[in-house]
Length: 353
Image (cartoon, rainbow, N blue to C red):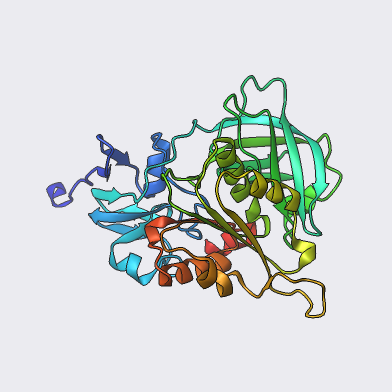
């Protein structure tokens, strides 16, 4: 009688390029299984809202915890792409990643103190956090990556913020983040208050948003809001390495009061070894103002500035990035040459769940 019941077979995860299959626990997602066993798997939001963890299912079946159609294109779905953070293997599965994980140090946990606070715009604040002396190591990270921040007694659930400056070869003991005010947001409201000398817990680095090597391929950057942080860090790091690739950077904002870091961007432009174009695009600037620059949405200007040979780096609100990615593909930039970091606030992540 008992022979009628089949013993459940152990589930194994095969990742293309990884020699050893990974065991997967019951009800465990592909992403969690990979991270638990030390695989540097690309990921960000972990709730199915950003598509950073997308991979191609080449063999086997999975149970999808949420609908992937709103973050993956119809073409990607037809090609077998899934979200690793929302996919539970039903048995033995094989997957392939488009890009290898970034070669960066393993994440660490440490404590820091807020040592500087600066209002960059009416709704974006810069915080400088210095690692406490008890932290016997500096932070090493790739420009474009992010850390998870929490504040004991105030914000227990960590929030993700990109490093706004690159790391030196010896690492960083002082790091900077740009935090945008979100209505009802606990961390963003806290960041605009009296936070100097506050203790903050940092975990990182995380993420696979970084500049891919290419001898002469043009770099196209698109950012909005606090999405300027990783783009600025990425470009400053490239400048330090005398990268000569031509750069076109379109920054979307509502009005002139939402523009910031203009001095830093001008310095980048002046010191860049090759061509560097910075185009701020304002969507709600009053018609009678003294603004002589670009108006409308960033996507309105892509046809003018997009070189189809470019590598594209996009950072900011999901709606803006989705529209830009779609337009870039229409203009000839293939999906594998578009690298995105979608900024989801805590409410957006909750809705994704």
